[in-house]
Image (cartoon, rainbow over all chains, first blue to last red; front, side):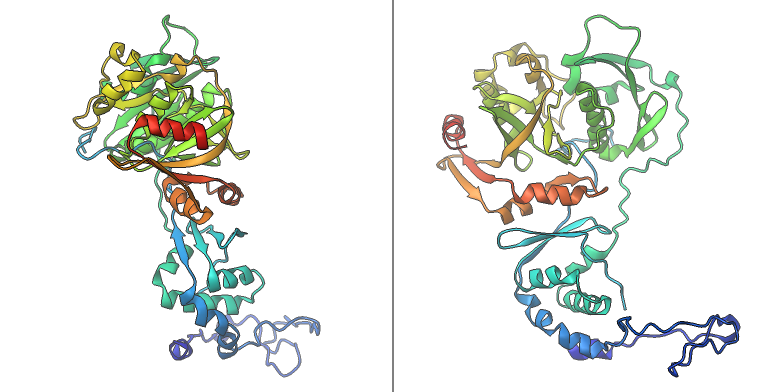
Length: 96
Length: 366
């Protein structure tokens, strides 16, 4: 299962220079190198949420991945509209 | 990667948790590792959550149903329909507690379907000014419910029982003088009360809910409603002014306790080939409109020749039996309120083979 999930690729869209709003080179600086002056600010206290890899995430979630088959679950779909008793078989008052 | 919606809430009970997904409108009951995961899920990073749900769906494809918006539009109120009062010339006038209500129809057959359970509320004298006017008209494959000239609901003719519920809602609101109440949920059930204890009687179609309710109401129980019971966000259920429907095959047994059944005419409304009579229990019991708090939910099942038996149900069973048969208002925090009420509700399974043993159990143990 894990192998299947790791093989799943994420197809990213490659940006075109014509529709580029800002460009950041991940060089440790936050200047916009596209020339559009959308310079960023560094926030050293900000937690880097993108740092986790899929592999790490799977390892972290391993306890659930291994145990999910053992849990009991029931998906319950309530009625989507209020209704009185539906007609009995053969009861078709509008003839439709 | 798919961005999966997190549960709107998780309500932990003894041995399991109940969750709700707003997009799909589905509840999920879980225990074990799944419960552990979803209890943690509110604090998980997005990527962790999404990967684990992906993994879950790959093992149990049905989980996908929790995250998908089913786009079920049952009643589309945006339909444009030009209503003229001259279309609905068949009129009946009802008194619902303090309110005088005029109901208009365009066809006699529609009137029979919608009004049979309310015939006992017809006024003896015609009034000239109604507090409210409701109209039900046909157009091709649809039915329209109007208040004055404003559309309240639209339904397909083949699903007329859904529009019947909307119509019943309005009459219950008029009966209780509570305009456009925001209902928490509606039950497909009957309800009775005795010694300040209110019972919701549930069961499959044909389980004998209405017959049992009629019999209990001849034995000291107060009638609350038949077929459709509405509950508000304070967990009160409301008297439903409709008469109880009694099918032809129950006339004999019901007549032993309610002699009135002999004098009531057979209704124009038949269920297939089955003849019906409507027993106006609120009128017979001289009831005034009241609200009630449910003490217990009782699933009844008639089983001939087997000993009558009352079995308490676990909270898990109560949730799994009630939710699929109930409409829960998806707005605001109503699903959460409903789940909160549900996990603290007591439920019983009652198998019975004769009325006297059943009544004995009701009186002694409930």
